[in-house]
Image (cartoon, rainbow, N blue to C red):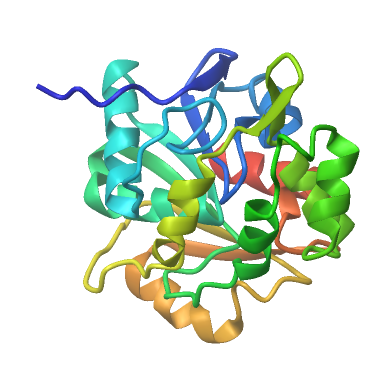
Length: 257
């Protein structure tokens, strides 16, 4: 008997199910605007992965677990032939899910991440987040000021601050499970296992100003995903869905239709 809790999600629209997975330190809310657009055509599921958003917290955290969480979610909601979009960490989950359970996925969209291994590179972010003491840093502006010492990029801090909420009167907290993400940080860059393939239609999107997918990654992508199209989103970095939502939406909706 599987006792794993079901992932939290926001479901809107009707039609073929379109499941969207956020990236590291993210949550379903990051996709709200695009989710609303997609829900005019599809039944959109904006999902919080474990240790993120409003989903359950556990000390264990790796892609095999994230994949099984997603399988449980699909089973629980009695979905089939889903469209799957994953950004960054969510893209890693979506890739592994698709090679393991290809019968459940109709089309796959991977956003600005490749199947290769990535060196852990979130040390400054984790150090900044772990420097917060909510008993002292008890307003958003104090949290931001503390984070700015280790995370100078305003955009990154604003993204992280979306996870700060009032846990109770006078006490702020992070929505993500910081201790588990810190402990398991090395898992985030894991490569897709060799000799795994998904042969249905696949779209890889890369930000024109991002270095997450380079030309040398393309043969590896084609090894795992034989029926793939790789498209560049202009004027955008790693958060291409937020930086150029119009081109992102147009390219994805054309691919899904």
